[in-house]
Length: 212
Image 1 (spheres, rainbow, N blue to C red):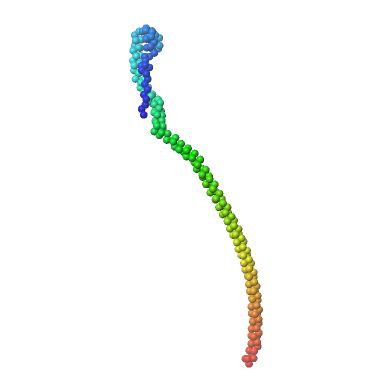
Image 2: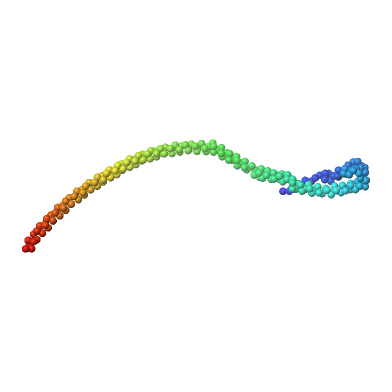
């Protein structure tokens, strides 16, 4: 982007100094200047030459200063160029594309609010009612199964308790029978031992007789 060059008017940059204007207006070469109180006519003419030379040499400096200022410190051309580029890019080339997108989104939202949402609500309510009925039936079946399982578990527990009590009673009866049999065996063993003792005692008595 090119910078806009601003130049200072020639009338201002090349104008004679204030002292020369005062002398030209008065028209007397021996009149006092602004900076000095008393000078000769010769010195006044020398000052005019120096002032005219200084003003002539300062004109290019003023031009350079104005150009440097316009290039470095005056950002208005850059900002104006950026603004023109922004307007051209987003209004002329794009053709309000974002606005059309927003309008399409707005139309889609209104259509969804007017048509799609009522249908969704209707379908949702119908499906929810059907699902609620199925859940109620499933809940009833679950309660029935739970009650049946509880009854079966209670019956099984009662059977186990009855079987355990029967086993305990059978064990006690078995132990009693074993104790009775043990007592009978001990009595028979005692009787047999006594009978053997009597036989051996009789044999001991008969043994000396047989030896004679």
